[in-house]
Image 1: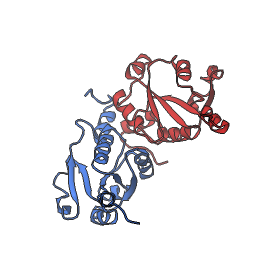
Image 2 (image 1 turned 90 degrees about the vertical axis):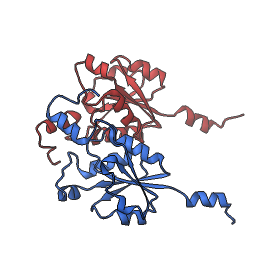
Image 3 (image 1 turned 135 degrees about the vertical axis):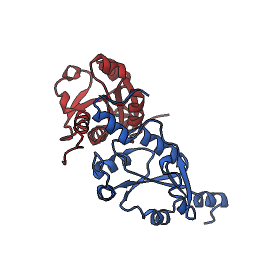
Length: 148
Length: 148
């Protein structure tokens, strides 16, 4: 069967977007980032940090990995979820999943530039005034989130 | 055009499931409930409580309505989101959306039985050990959630 060139090119040019995160206390900032990343391509793969990886880097989430991945998997903009177990797995993932774009929040600006030889790197603005830490802090202060 | 009877019946028997909630600090208990409700039918409609309605009944959420509905809308098991503005809107919604099943968590057991003449009422078990209040309490205690 002869595949028309246009169709073949379209297939070859399928854009795979990859991102990573902990996604603790799933909030509007997470959702907005995933929505915008999905719009950059055709498929969005999300690496969710394992509890062991978080412990290794001295961080803890309120919700366990098993729950965080289920929530991220249930978001309609997400096509595939993988485990993030090591900080040095990004290059392997880019090769394995034929990633076109690695996209992270702007708190990562510059930190992944070493991977520019492998794929496009984009840093997207974070949602102003929201983060898992801020929710935790505001809740611990017992006064809910201040109005935004 | 003559529509085969089987096809016609299948269409007429489309099951619409309706539920209501605040969905503050979206967690695995919310997700599990939405997943199980969706499996009961063909379409899942979710009524999300407005901030005004919550204030009226003396409750407050950490996250505003505008964010809570966006997160619920992004869950792949949810087909439509509506506002829940009054406690007495359920009968109207059942008529308007041709609801087959009204499904709520088991904390509501018995409380909606008066609507059984309008549609089927089901109360599904809640996920053990998780609730928005429990997350808030655990975070306020500053020690995260206890292991489950």
